[in-house]
Amino acid sequence: MPGVANDQEIRVRPLLSAGEVARVLGIGERTLWRMVSRGRTGRDGFPQPVRLGARTVRWRWEDVETFLRRRAGN
Image 1: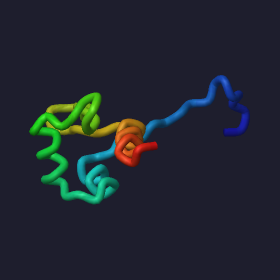
Image 2: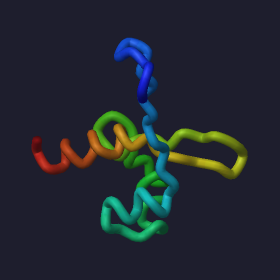
Image 3: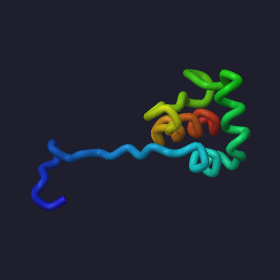
Image 4: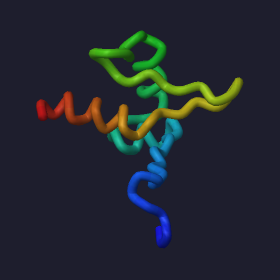
């Protein structure tokens, strides 16, 4: 952005819906929710979603990306 110094730069980290996460992983949305409900989340599993409201859940892109890198062995 013009006129904004590097130390003042704002980094936006997108939040993904369940449908978007499922598409990134190449799985169905039901499979994603099964992974979450069966406890395959957390440090060694799939990242925990962030609850933004009573019916709004999102995943941080950086968490999904880290999960994919671990699965790929990188």
